[in-house]
Amino acid sequence: MVAYCPICGKPVYFGEKKRSLGRDYHPLCLKCYQCKRQLSSGQHAEHDDKPYCTHCYMKQFGPRGPRR
Image (cartoon, helix red, strand yellow):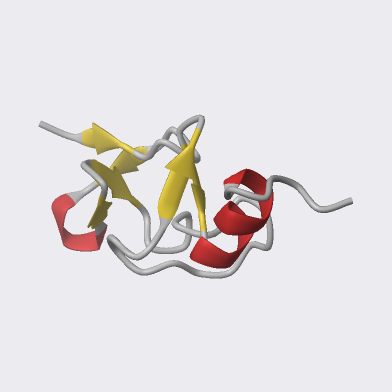
């Protein structure tokens, strides 16, 4: 069974997949939604099904909320 990348929607084949937080991504698609930094498997957070690096996630959704 072929999985589909949650970012681009294209098929992700076994030899190319990066699995993180229960989803399969293309290696180049797994990047922070905010700053576009490449992310490694399991080393990021998600909000509304979008991956964020820890820094951007805390800045946007952390206890202090968005900075203005």
